[in-house]
Length: 236
Ligand SMILES: Nc1ncnc2c1ncn2[C@@H]1O[C@H](COP(=O)(O)OP(=O)(O)OP(=O)(O)O)[C@@H](O)[C@H]1O
Ligand SMILES: Nc1ccn([C@@H]2O[C@H](COP(=O)(O)O)[C@@H](O)[C@H]2O)c(=O)n1
Image (cartoon, rainbow, N blue to C red; front, side):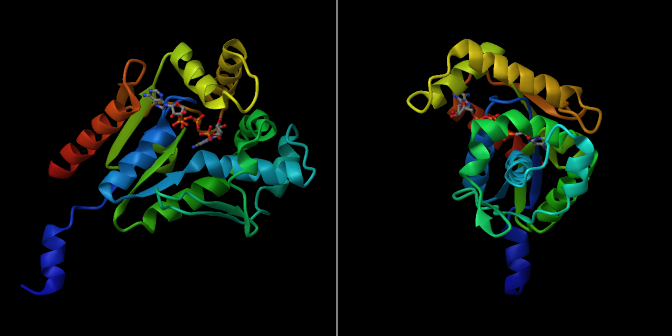
């Protein structure tokens, strides 16, 4: 048997995994860790929606005007890295990983991501990134299982109680800015309502997704659970 044939027999099959769920359920932390453990690529689609939102704000586009957002949707050049050890995102060649996490962007992102022209653009980008990952990829977002990758090998929908999600986010913000638990919970609920209520590919669980309630699980337990689901799928 030649080397290529041996490699084909021993390398694990490429696997495409979609992880969706509301804010603060642990999608990013889990997806990154799982991809790193299994040697897969990783794509944070939320970062792409944040990047286009940041560009709109920086360029004076009224994010509450869907026609203005749609007209500008094709302009920024958004490039996402897929290394789980160092997720990267650039807009027009500049590192955007810091600016996309501001409160201003978080407050505006649901309005921008509800515009169909924005979704069409980013869905195309996400599909081409996934198709270019021969080893397989973990893609996380809100509509991966329902719209972006409906043929994914495995779809997971993470949930957690609103209280657990708010507590996780408050813990994250401690020391950075004084945001109380109630305000954090209200902001999460507002964003989830907007993301679930939009007409184009809303946040939703795909019919064939495995739901994992992370409320009572540590992050390590969630990671282990997802790794097991992927290994089962690969073995099937
Ligand atoms: N099972 C868990 N137990 C405790 N903390 C967790 C758990 N999962 C994630 N976290 C923590 O909760 C915070 C939010 O997690 P993460 O950013 O992964 O969520 P997310 O679903 O990607 O959120 P968003 O959609 O808003 O980006 C992080 O600080 C993370 O370390
Ligand atoms: N597939 C996706 C992913 C994200 N969004 C929108 O982006 C926002 C930010 O996402 P984070 O995961 O970084 O918090 C999110 O609230 C959605 O509005 C999306 O629409 N589809």
